[in-house]
Image 1 (cartoon, rainbow, N blue to C red):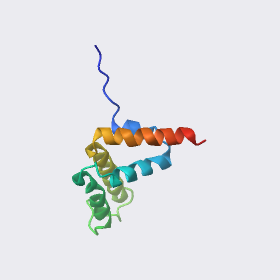
Image 2: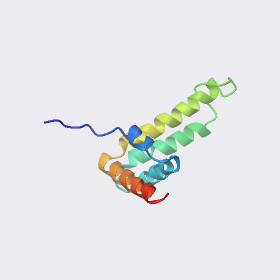
Image 3: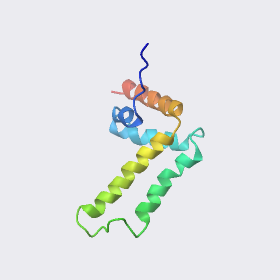
Image 4: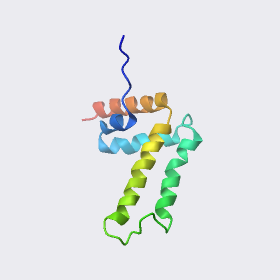
Amino acid sequence: MTTEKPESPAKAISKLPFRKRFVLVWRLLTDSRVPFSAKLVLPGVGLYLLFPFDLIPDFIPILGMLDDVLVIILGLWLFLRLAPRPVFDEHLQRLQLEAAEKP
């Protein structure tokens, strides 16, 4: 008896067309079944980006913006991991069906 592990959210979302990825995040953000604590991650990332102090100052070439990109990526990853898996899978399947219907 073999049990297949479900795909990680990052791998599953990478199979979507680029525009649909934003739609998936928006749908999860507006879904009432996603816990409020998970929904707080994205505004937290936004506040970090608006906050005038950075881990690495932006005037340092390349590294200054790299920490911002890293915070965005980790914030999205955390949001997707905190969203309940059945809800994530439901929205993902709907978007895959919508993408398959449109040429």
